[in-house]
Length: 296
Image (cartoon, rainbow, N blue to C red; front, side):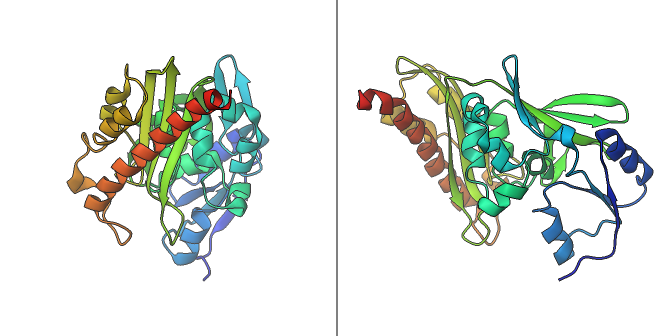
């Protein structure tokens, strides 16, 4: 299948991309990052932009670095480049665990971290994980930069706080060095997207959970934090009993009637999966924390 005709522009700088977005503000315009979501949508007719602005060659949007106690990831950094940086695993373990499960090797070689977050597909692996990782998204437009916490960035399915002439330039992740991060996912057998995916970022001191952040994908129309699970973990020993009790609370603050309901799974079934995969994510964290002691 072939997409409809469109005008193509390749931006060399962030400023040029913003100028193009403003110039074509009255037309249907899309930004091209890795293309793994946009191009299939254009081929099937789900998206038919008049203007395509290619930002894939903007060097300022690429790379992983550590600044003070913050991991900074350029929006155009590919999944593979993100995983290839040791700093990603050290400072953002939950985010790294989720990126490892995105697509396949070919997708990870071309798809981008920022493209995933900005696309706001509720079944993708990063929005809920970004919330669990306390990510801040930096967007830039004609009036300069804005900082948006991940939990305030998403309005719903494919809907974000990005303005019409803004683009995501980078994400900033507070260092979670010393914490354990996991991601447990029930992948769609047809697409590999998350029917349900749960990310956990835990800090544990002498067996007691001192900090817990848990997020989920694929359940609601955007990523969500699982506050009741976090509350059930805080101050408790990380053992099987605590994990089971916390997982039972995974859907406590979520309206089952509003859960995703499609050919893959009903909302009710997703609610059951959410408990199962919350328990799996937490159990994996427990196993990782106990592994060094078992090896001694």
